[in-house]
Length: 286
Ligand SMILES: NC(=O)c1ccc[n+]([C@@H]2O[C@H](COP(=O)([O-])OP(=O)(O)OC[C@H]3O[C@@H](n4cnc5c(N)ncnc54)[C@H](OP(=O)(O)O)[C@@H]3O)[C@@H](O)[C@H]2O)c1
Image (cartoon, rainbow, N blue to C red):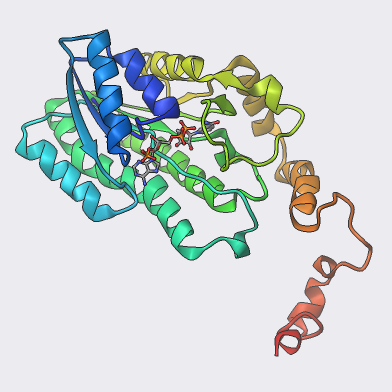
């Protein structure tokens, strides 16, 4: 079993919960020290566990290739792939640095694609295996300040659902987990400022991991860990898009203007003028 993003948060907890059950765990993250510490911890939990540590920056496709080559050279078979590593940033899109955006796209989208592509073929040949993708409930919300992160999560959602259908009947299970707020005890710089519901929705990391694994064992297509989050996601799925936009509008205004209120003459109300080459178009920028 290979788990990415295992040096902290949900990935580390998944590894801890799997340590007593799995035969071999391949641990993937960038931080070598934290990987080594986790290996020691897991071996203390289960001395017979095979633990293989791979330090890898998943935002670099050539590093992913090196990781996969290393597994092949060392005859490590991966029956279950857990695409958990992910990164996010909070802020106005036009103010984000391009290298950071690119890194996010590579880590959240390209890496799961590459790993899945290289590992799933052998699973299909063996007629057994599994892909567990840890996405985010944020992928189906319109969260201002998380434009790129939300887009990468929506991508993962579409990929996972289609892949699951493609693999039906092959013996390979595909499950997506879309958590809400999880108390990982880590740096939450990627999260937007907390809304009033966050405290109600937040679950401990151990619960997120155990519900993810239980859902995967039941071959569920989609797991929303936490009862409150699950109900909120089901309810949100029934809402029209315009209602979702309205829900997030105050947060968007606070993000850009520092207040949820807007003055009457704001340029967002003048798209017709833009098409006509009026104020706000090229003339303004020249
Ligand atoms: N926590 C939440 O509230 C929450 C909610 C919804 C969804 N999620 C999703 O759940 C997953 C895990 O989140 P988390 O909160 O547990 O995150 P976290 O505590 O920040 O851990 C992220 C893990 O990913 C690894 N990672 C990040 N970038 C990497 C890269 N370029 N290459 C290799 N490893 C990388 C990190 O290790 P290194 O830094 O050592 O590389 C770390 O082990 C993410 O996909 C996230 O989108 C989390």
